[in-house]
Image (cartoon, rainbow, N blue to C red; front, top):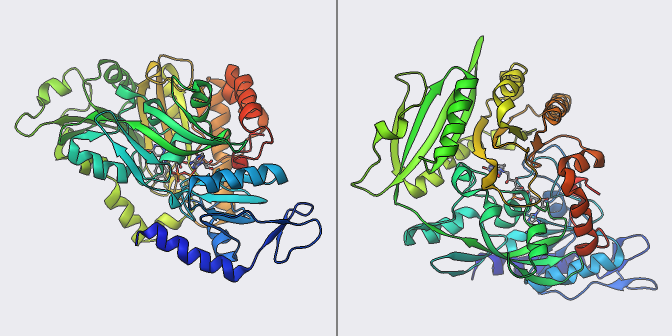
Length: 484
Ligand SMILES: Cc1cc2nc3c(=O)[nH]c(=O)nc-3n(C[C@H](O)[C@H](O)[C@H](O)COP(=O)(O)OP(=O)(O)OC[C@H]3O[C@@H](n4cnc5c(N)ncnc54)[C@H](O)[C@@H]3O)c2cc1C
């Protein structure tokens, strides 16, 4: 029996035990008996769960900072269940949000949480439906690692991958999905051929660049505001079986940034990332991480790959791995962090997009505020891509030719006051960034107002609100971002 089916059957047993049968639209509470003014819970292929353990699981995410307990969790048995629950929520004025899975959302500040309403456990629908030379059609609950497991043996891959490939397709396409291939291919949202969405009106709609393009453009990086993504057809490209990974060290942020921008322009690598590393009692160092894919027997020419770069001589390290192992490169670190309990620590992350010309000075200035106590050993990402590689309308980026991703991926002690101080520090970073025209990648942890969101979307704000009015007219979808 497939896992998902076994899980649904088990869950049906649980829901029967809970004996919730009705909903009271006045109090917006579920009830164990019918009666005047109450409405029946709609019939579903899957299950609506009300038990405390399930709801508590849905009240957590990777950040472990925000905790909102939903009134119920839908484990959908079909896309029709999602249609039914969105319509029900709309009719009775309760919220709905999709989530990567119970207790497994990789959001860091409650973006996939809500209180009065229903969380949809998207992992319950996680089938890979079709693969051909151009694309793969998957349910939104599928993880990128599961896509790679079937495409890599065919010599194919989604063009852009997140650093961590256990994220869900629906979750990353709602946000963006950035990785080192962005300098060639844009983000994951720029590489979608077709989507199937349940809108906030409860309509199941297919959309693509040529069919219902308005919805297609709204939903990608739409932060779950316009529809629940239920299926996606992801573009596939040919990939060579091997990857040569180059790392090299820099001591000067401006020199590092200049090389990053030059590499984003000439695209000599298939993958381009970089990191900053804090040093005790010394300025930070910067690490180039760049990769070239190759066929065995025809490796890249190292001198040509590294020509003209200004890293510290003698610091280059190369290694060859399979394409899949490269894509899955942080799995061992994650397993280690899970084994020592660090995965369960609070993660007050901040991820921002910095305009190219300001990036080196901004990052140097901000790193002066950070040390082992604020990073907790978490990595600091710092890498460039070209603005014109990104075409998704609602992915907010600075208006500069080159853009840098700068991410402080903090691991914090489980002490509320320490976490609150880091969240405030994130806000200070953001305030400084905004003065430069920088933008936030909204997966991180900081408090924002609607005015911040308006500023975030800039000229696109009116389109964002218009799309909300059109596709989620009762504003039931995904309140966790605090936009409306
Ligand atoms: C260890 C780690 C590594 C990461 N690496 C990267 C990286 O390299 N690049 C990158 O871009 N991001 C990265 N992220 C961030 C990640 O992209 C976001 O957390 C994103 O939210 C996806 O996570 P998720 O699949 O768990 O979705 P969730 O956290 O469950 O959801 C994210 C948002 O999308 C909404 N949502 C979820 N599913 C759907 C759906 N089907 N339809 C509509 N809305 C939906 C949720 O309500 C929420 O608002 C990383 C996060 C972690 C924890």
